[in-house]
Length: 175
Image (cartoon, rainbow, N blue to C red; front, top):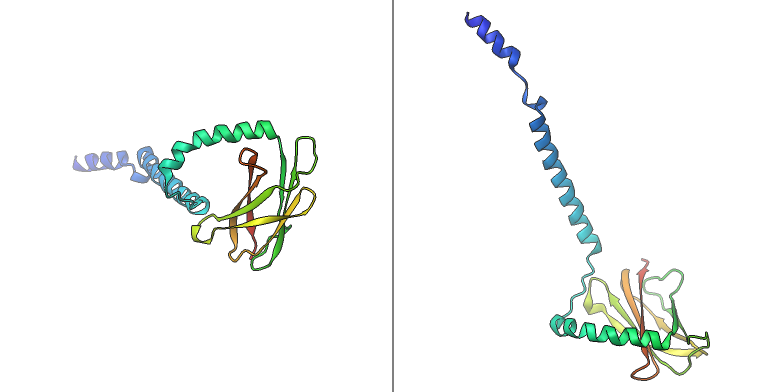
C-alpha cells in the first residue's frame, strides 16, 4: 500500500525549474539587473557635470532673462554660424570662426564677440577668449584645447547692451 502512495507522490512531483512562478521571478530579477546596468551606463556616459554655484538666484532670473532673449531674437533676427575646424584636435592651435549677419544677410561689423568654452565634466578647465574681426562679419580666434572629449562652446555677440545674442554648440576634441 505504501508503494502505491509513494508512486502516486512521485508521479505528481514537478521540478521547481518547470514551474511558471520560478521562471517569472527569474525573469523579473534578470530584467531588473539589466535595466539597472543600462541606467548606470547611461548616467556615466551622459553626465554633463555642469554645476551652478548660485543655482537659486540663476533659477529665479532665468525666466526674466529668457523673455529678454526671446525679444532680442525676434527684434534682431541675426544669422549666426560657428565654424570649428573639421577635426578639432587636442594640443593644436586651431582657428574657430564665427559668422554674424543681420536679417537681410548683410555682415555685422564692429560687434563685440567672445567665445566661452566649457569642459563638460571639469569646470576648472573652462575659459573664454575674445574673437577678433578678420573680415566683414567674420570673427575668429585661435584656440588650443588641452583636454580631449566633449566641450560646450557659447559665442556671445553684442553691439550694445540691448543688442546681444548667444549661440551654443557642442564639439568633440580628438586625441
